[in-house]
Image (cartoon, rainbow, N blue to C red; front, side, top):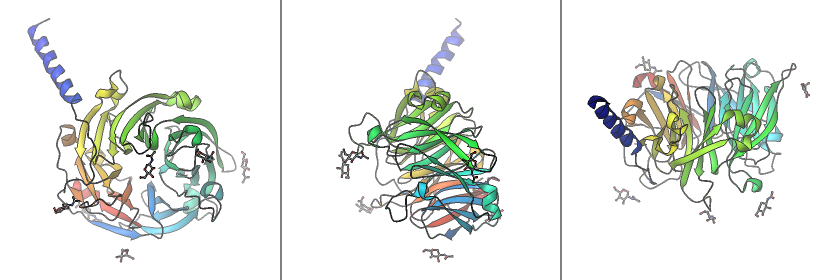
Length: 398
Ligand SMILES: *[C@@H]1O[C@H](CO)[C@@H](O)[C@H](O)[C@H]1NC(C)=O
Ligand SMILES: *[C@@H]1O[C@H](CO)[C@@H](O)[C@H](O)[C@H]1NC(C)=O
Ligand SMILES: *[C@@H]1O[C@H](CO)[C@@H](O)[C@H](O)[C@H]1NC(C)=O
Ligand SMILES: *[C@@H]1O[C@H](CO)[C@@H](O)[C@H](O)[C@H]1NC(C)=O
Ligand SMILES: *[C@@H]1O[C@H](CO)[C@@H](O)[C@H](O)[C@H]1NC(C)=O
Ligand SMILES: *[C@@H]1O[C@H](CO)[C@@H](O)[C@H](O)[C@H]1NC(C)=O
C-alpha cells in the first residue's frame, strides 16, 4: 500500500470519528434567545385549534381542526376558509362521549386524489375533488384500528396502496407503548375507499412522527420515550427503523433497530436527497440529523451527524427552498419561563458542518405543524393555541 493511500485512510478515519462524535443532545427547558428575522407573513383566524395541514394543490389546503377538517382557499397569500368537513362518529366518538379524538396529522396521497386525516382510532379519507366540488359527502372512507384512540400521524406508501397510522399511546394490550397500524386500502367502483387492517408494530412510549426512505423500503419513526423505560415519564427517546415490506405483511416483526434520539423526539422529515432524517427533539430543543446510510448499516449508533440548537420545544419540521433550509416550529407548548415561540430557519449545509446560532421568524402561540405550497413559495403554519393559520413568504429566505 502506498504512503499516500495510507495517509488518505488516516484522514478518512479521523473524518469518520469526527462525524460520529456529535454529542448526545441532553435535555433543556427554555432555549437560549435567538436573533429574529422578519419576512412577510399574514394569518387567518379559526374557530378550532388547527393541527395537521397539507396542500392538495396550489390553491387548496386542508387542516385538521377539532372534530372536522377545514378546507381552505390558498389562492391569495392570506388563506380563507372554504368549507368545513365533519368527520364520522366512528372516528370522532359519539357526540358528548368525551372522546378526545381530534383530527391531527394529515397527508395527501401521491396521486393527489385523497387526503388522509388521522383521528381517534384511525383516519378519515377525504376525496379531494368531491370536497372542492362541494359534494355533501366528501368523506369516502374510514380506517379503524385496534390499538387505541390517539391517532396522530399518517404516512402513505409511494404506490398509495398502504397507509400507516401512528397510535401515540397504544392500549393496555401494547402495555401503553405506541404503535404503527398498517392498512391496505382499496378503491371501490362506487367511489368509496376502504382499508384492511394488517396489524401493527409496537414501538416505545408516545409514538408520533413517521416518514419513508426515498425508495420507500424503510420507515423511520419517533418514540418520545424508549420502549425499555419503566415509566412514560422518562425522557430518552428513540428513532426506529422498520422494514416496509415486512410492515405490509407481518407488522409485528418489522422493527429492525432503534437508536437514541435526544429527549422527547416527536416529528421527522427526510431530506430531498434522502440522505438524512431530520428529527425534532422537543425536550432537547434540538434539530437532529441522522444519516440514513448509517441507520441502515451495522453501525446505526454512529448515525447522528448534526445536533442543531433551535428554539423552545420544537415540534413541526419542514423542508424549504428545495432543501436549502429546514424550519422548526418552536412551540413552547409547556410555557417555560423566559421562552418564546418562533420558527427557526436552519441552513442545511451549515448545520451539517456543525454551525449553530440560527435565527427565528416570530409566530403565534404553539406553532405545531407545517405545509409548504407546491410552488415552494409559501409556508403555512398551524398555530394551535392562537387558533390561526399563518402564511409565511419563503421566497424572502432564498
Ligand atoms: C385574529 O385574532 C387575533 C388575536 O385574537 C386578533 O387580534 C385579530 O384581529 C384577528 N384577525 C381577524 C382578521 O379577525
Ligand atoms: C387498562 O388497565 C387499567 C389499569 O390496569 C385498567 O384500569 C383499565 O380498565 C384497563 N382498560 C381496559 C380497556 O382494559
Ligand atoms: C361501495 O362499495 C363497497 C364494496 O365495494 C360497499 O361495501 C359499500 O357499501 C358501497 N357504498 C355505497 C355508498 O354504495
Ligand atoms: C408521570 O407523571 C405524571 C404527571 O407528573 C404523574 O401523575 C404520574 O404519576 C407519573 N407516572 C409515573 C409512572 O411516574
Ligand atoms: C428569566 O430571565 C431573567 C432575566 O434574564 C432572569 O433574571 C431569571 O432568572 C430568568 N428566569 C428563569 C426561570 O430562568
Ligand atoms: C414574497 O417575497 C418575494 C421576494 O422578496 C416578493 O417578490 C413577493 O412579492 C413576496 N410576496 C408576498 C405575498 O409577500
